[in-house]
Length: 74
Image (cartoon, rainbow, N blue to C red):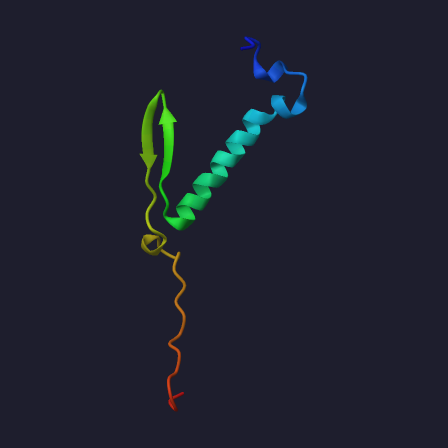
């Protein structure tokens, strides 16, 4: 394993990978909040679950559509 910091890498993809991973983690959290899905992470070697409320319990997250008429009634 190379002991040099990743910020000093000559490959720009490698050098910018921490920023890309942070962006991906933020997007994963946004999607988890929208869908009410938990995220599983490892923090200091301990597996943790981050729970988000179901979208229906978040105010303004539900769309209320008008009732559909049935039969001859308008």
